[in-house]
Length: 139
Image 1: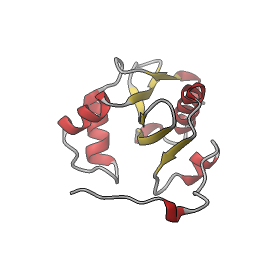
Image 2: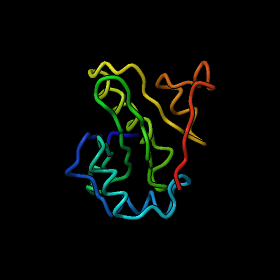
Image 3: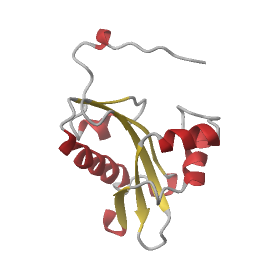
Image 4: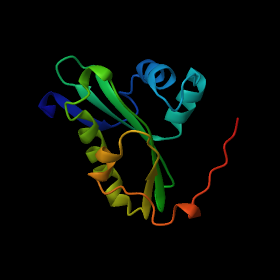
């Protein structure tokens, strides 16, 4: 089903306006995020997308924050509602994992409220000791 879609690790092809709309209006984790903040996040991250080969339209986005040597954080993963259920999320995550593997990272982290099954297919699991992880939320 994904043969009409292509994955890429790119900064140039990212449709920043579309990504901002998805993240700031449709995501559960970053509603209201400003365009300036989203652009800064894009600029400071490894960016990935999936595009419809027939229309050229971007249909998915994700970014990775990493030091390129020891860890990465996969975040802002979003698939457009009109193409969900077509394997786009799988194409995106599989492409990201393949792109990061040569770096020899020790761990890739992520947070999700609703896609545990997707990520489990690619080796993600709950940490053995979740008490080791902490978060400091900033307003």
